[in-house]
Image (cartoon, rainbow, N blue to C red; front, side, top):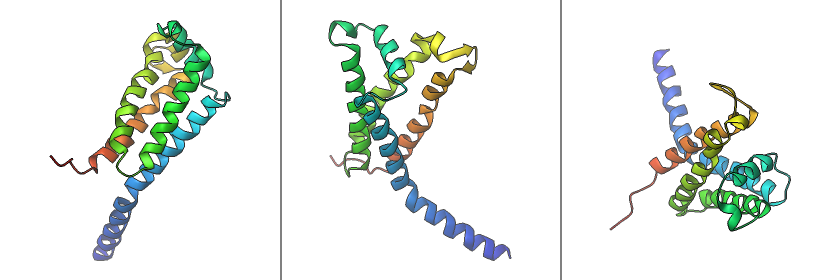
Length: 150
């Protein structure tokens, strides 16, 4: 019985290893592209949060809040596309790191929006904090990359 369980375990682990990276890439594509499209077409529930963050920055000298929302949406769409295009994952991860800095800013810059009380995030705060999972998925993809040749 132990031998059979070991064989089944090995088969399952091998199968999961084969699909984990493609599944992570597809999942990141779906989340980033979908949420980006919602911002671009103006139907994202995060538009208020993005606009509030915009209002707390110096960007008003360069663009409108509406333009900022669309730019963020386009960046998210690009990140999603780059995760599924072969050889673009490094670019996707770089852009994603920059985007995540912006995404986590409301935790600090908009505490009334992100927190009900200490250690108790609002729904918006939870929306932001869940991005830790996306970062972990990107790290998992990066772990599967081959080093660049010199």
